[in-house]
Image (tube, helix red, strand yellow):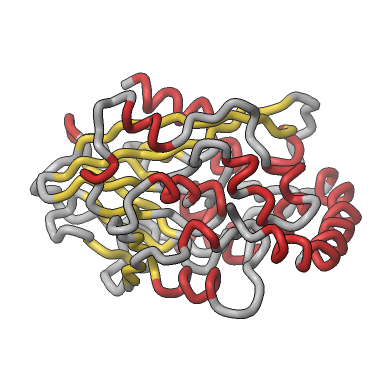
Length: 317
């Protein structure tokens, strides 16, 4: 079980941050942050490396919730809700089978959420029931021991909790900046539960490759253009996008939580202060990343981890 004692220790600072975020929200709903026209004008798109291999991609949809449209994309004056997804992506490369965002374990409400400080569990808990990662893999006759590694887009609890259902021998690969942010210091940042990583082999990555698309740094994971990691910092310091070359010549960008919904990309809108000030480590950099997503070529299919409609459309294919 996750360390609930740490969650209790972090409660007062988190409550104060929630209050500050709530106070800032009404004004930003009326006057959302404006897009930076100068930044958009400066963004060039560099073609990704030619793909000499392709990957298979399977969506493992594990949980659902919903959130008010007005807080997902500030300034959108609608009183409805957007459906939100939680899940993992199974990627099958000729040289490895791995998971992007091993999202949820079974009984995540009892095993992981108590490690978050109040009131965050009330804000982020998925609807019950959820499908644990082990069961999601079993439904496709996949042995968890056959997973070579996991590749979270970032280390918030809902992108890593599924590793609790993988063998300890399965390593976690992610940027060193993300590891330092999440694991250094006496307490975890808001949204992070460290327990799923205890005793797990951690394999730091460095995005030291050239610009790809509108992103300044990259890493061609296998050296064949099929899986290219791009720097999407802001939501967390080491957030990445995973650009996949899939069959039929399609390029799919798994964008993690750089945005929660494609509406943010089309309108160039950040999350409202509540919850954005709680979960975005650097709001300015996160907003810049949204600009970079907006400026992508039209043939790049962007799938944000919590955009239910985008995730479901990808799963249907």
